Image (tube, rainbow, N blue to C red; front, side, top):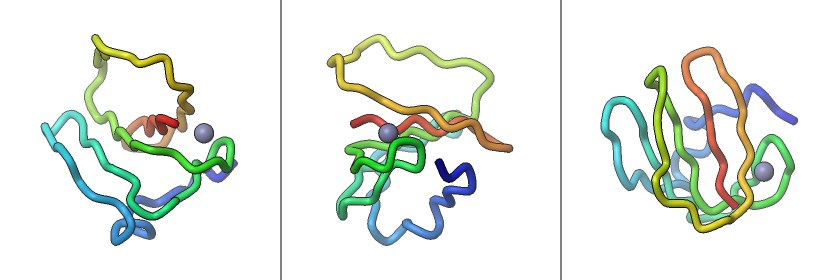
Amino acid sequence: MDPDFDIHDHRHRMKLLRDTGEMSIYDNMDGVRCPACTEIFERLVLIEGRSTSFPEHAGAPFCLVRRAEDIALFRH
Ligand SMILES: [Zn+2]
């Protein structure tokens, strides 16, 4: 596990899909690997708000990494 995963190190390999200020969602365009399980993930969600809800969930596995400024959710 790599808790120091830095989005800026991989920014050119990810596409920003949405940024609400509380949450930003990135599409993994180039096989970036999840810092928690080392598998390639599909989407990265950076959660900066104190709480959030995910009304839809397709049942795909995901990993969470707690960071200083946010929580990173890696959806596989
Ligand atoms: Zn993972």
